[in-house]
Amino acid sequence: MKNGSEKESNRNTDHSGWLAPLPETLPKPTVWPAVMAMGVWFLAWGILTSWLISAAGFSLFSAGCAGWIAELRKGQMTKKQESSKK
Image 1 (cartoon, rainbow, N blue to C red):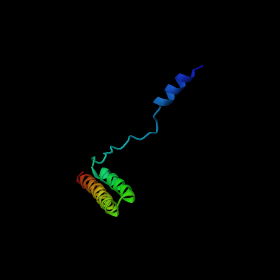
Image 2: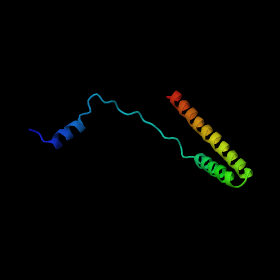
Image 3: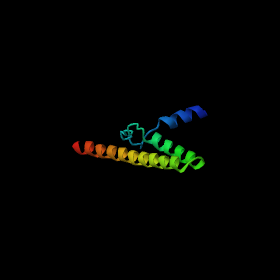
Image 4: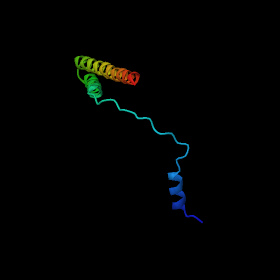
């Protein structure tokens, strides 16, 4: 009779029916999430102090959001172009 550790090791090594993982690339690191976070911080600080600081925070948040989306779209376009060359 097999003990529990032998059963577990057999279960972990039986990979029949599994598919090989596809190679996946991560997007490049970018500064835009930090810009968005700073915008949120300025928005919150502006609520306590002045509407001008809130306006600056909204501008930073909007620029960060637009920049991040543009960066992600650029990466997707590059990925599609690379796959079409193959």
